[in-house]
Image (cartoon, rainbow, N blue to C red):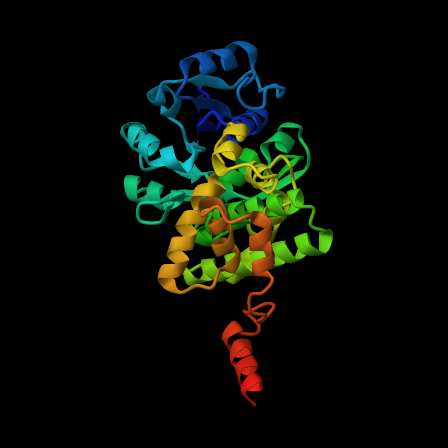
Length: 353
């Protein structure tokens, strides 16, 4: 008998990749998951649980886990790449021999590669040359998805087939998939918000009030959209799930790894202690350094990112940096309606008059 089910491959054994496997399998797809660790793959196949990530989550028993890339990718139509940014390129290159141009490749990784300041979908594009490339991003805490709490995400691609295929593969009663054609903006939103989740965690640990946290999130949104637009993104993208939606959840939830790192820093721990206590990858730590360097190169005003960099890497006390940030220039609220430069110039003239 022929198998007419959609054939899905998920590369990565972390929380989000594991949650995606069950969604696709619940929707009737044939799903195979690649993990580097053969023992973990065997445990998933035997117990239908991932004891390292989401240990209480029961994975759809139809999901087949394997440490063999060729087996997982064989005849797959849709491939989700859920690998941390530091290992993303290495895994894509390992998988390249088993990929074919008709496949749809979708990154779910919210990070930036240091070499060349490349986003994950750019790596997929450059390494494969495939036409069907997409990005899945949004306010998607894996623990809540595993509990089947109502969640929405964004599939971003210039390719209509990619958008439609992912919507059909993952859309269900509790996981809604919305479409965008601003792949770069959606992907940058997912990477940049991790910076500000660290800052929000620090603010919470320092006992800062709701007014302060609201200010932090809205100025963060202004800052991340300012940077993204300088890189070619559409500012309207940041009004959606991949912008303000993802920013809100990662700046508010203790499920967020970056928030937890920030909270530990606000409690007085060192960066190494905070990361070690987390025991998982917090993409925002690496992103702070990369974005800070890029913004300085291109003259993009990013005081929150700069301040966080000083806390993370130059041992400036978090409370001291928060105070200094309040002394930054007061310019426009939404600079896409009123340019920051115009406000600064008007203030300068008023002060000189």
